[in-house]
Length: 106
Length: 462
Image 1 (cartoon, rainbow over the protein chains, first blue to last red):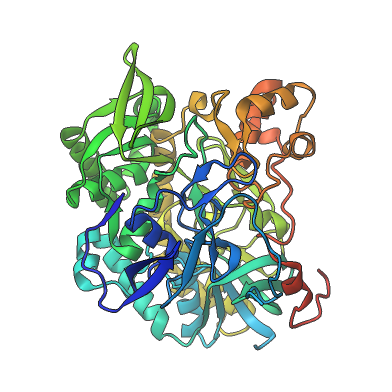
Image 2 (cartoon, rainbow over the protein chains, first blue to last red):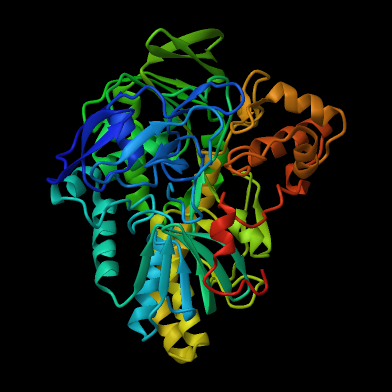
């Protein structure tokens, strides 16, 4: 859905979205990676399970909520990619079971 | 973490960076907080780390932003990126940073949290592939990506012209530009034209963008009744134009209906607000130094009325000068002298604003969502459902919230506050400015209880 139009900065990292390895420039957001690799949606909604994708890209709309390294409800547009990051699309209402107060999976 | 600061700046966009730099110049080392992973705000997003070729490709204003970002990075300023403020009270700020919350106190606070694109619900605006026009600008600057195209753009506002120009520059096919502004806007704006001539270069640049769009894309000015549907792999925008219903298809649809102040944080802070009748939004009320009715709290940049980046840097500098004077770092004479060039710059921007606000005034018809449009994206409530609750006797957004749940989801009403107020105003024939927006309450964004409970300082006065 999106294509690179400017030279990407040199260092890249590999992240795993739904188990698929994606190579993305360091410093870009998870949401940008999702759009760049045409992943059709970022989450499904809590009530009607409709597909949603990133909308505002600035942390306001909460449409890009994804599960990042085991923690649900993360705004993918605010999270910079890190090597070996595990990202999953959030399906329906988030499940917070086993999440420690600091926001890391126990 | 130092728990007391003489100056805290919230937001590291043009206003916040300029404020921090000016304060540092006069011996005040401020703490600067920003939700994003790097300084720049949205307009100068990633400008400090962008490669020269990127800066050049995006434009002159962005190049100035790059210098500002670099100066900010090198200044004696404590900058916490990825720090999001969730509560603010006089002299007190609570924020979350890397999964840990902190409470700090401050003698002086400058709020420079900016604006956001006005959310205008229409059928299909929740489909993946439909984004804000500002979002593509952010993606271009921060990740160097743009939609593959074809792209359909819908809406009204200077940022829409800028986005079209970027798409064309990078060879993205634009299938059509569906313009929703009133065709009579330019005529209504004529009396304000002399003011606009205070910034001839800016005006010439804007006219150039408009001409470029008119010559190189298919435009549909004065379109109404917009709706988006998924059509196989494409998104199909239908609208009413020149007497009949038309369709334009693309793989990405970009929406834009102007930029408005994001007033949740200022309302939580207890600041008095003023109404912008042309652009129909509330913003913090300030004097020329950014002072609000709350002692020690100043607002700078688009959070105190949208005027753009040039005005934001001027307002940030002025607010910092006044804060430094209050902190006893400079004399009133020094403050006034340093302020002169900034005040001149600000006057030019402000002279132009009535013209901009009128030329790009939103069309009232567009602000009333069609029945099938999802208005509250989080709770998935359509305009029809909400209108029924409004007619059953909801006269305020908070009343409607308890009746039908709009604004109860994760975005906390950021996306539906404006349309909900517009719908209530229309249904009960109440002037929009008489409708109190959703009450802003802490935490300003969803926060887990564990984090709130493990605050590093006692939450006194919370």
